[in-house]
Amino acid sequence: MRIIAIARIEFGEIVTINPVKSTAKVKLPELDGKTTGDLLVLVPLANEDKDFKVFLPGTMVVCLFMENSLERGFILGTFFSEKFKTPDGATKDKRILEYPGGAKIEIDKSTGILNLDIVKTLNVNVPIVNVNSTEVNFNSENIKLNGKVTANNIKVKENLDVGGDTTTQGTTKTDGGRVL
Image (tube, rainbow, N blue to C red):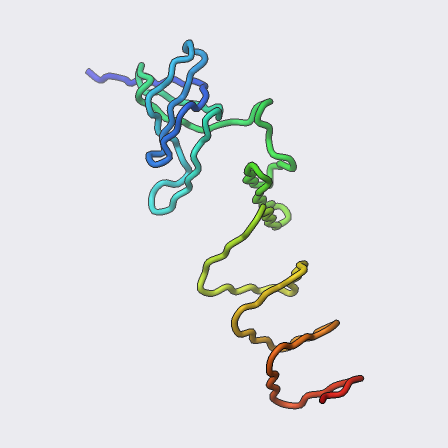
């Protein structure tokens, strides 16, 4: 005789999390506020490629339970609601990651634009960075370059203040000033 497992879906609110195991306990209002056991959180990637984000307590979630037990099941995901609204600017073509404090990552596949709104510091740790572009603009009060700088052609539109020795190769031309 074959036994068929029964599954059911419930809506609930995260009450505790275990980020190490990627599990959470959920309070189920429709079941008199009963709390589940540790439920596995479904994630997009969990093999060699990983995509990790833990749900915070208070997050409303959809749960799938196996058989008739609140101890065996999965958290399928969360959803937007009147309390937790869709991010501003959301369209069918955008992927938006928004965090408390103002950090935001937005990519728009219809325009090909990636926007990064970083609150404090952006750290990029990589041995080599290659940028292929027709134009790169930096709007900053200060740009610091540590180490050697190699450039094919540099045009300075305003002042050039050099501290230390200057070595030139080839012809040095000046216009409107004297070299002392």
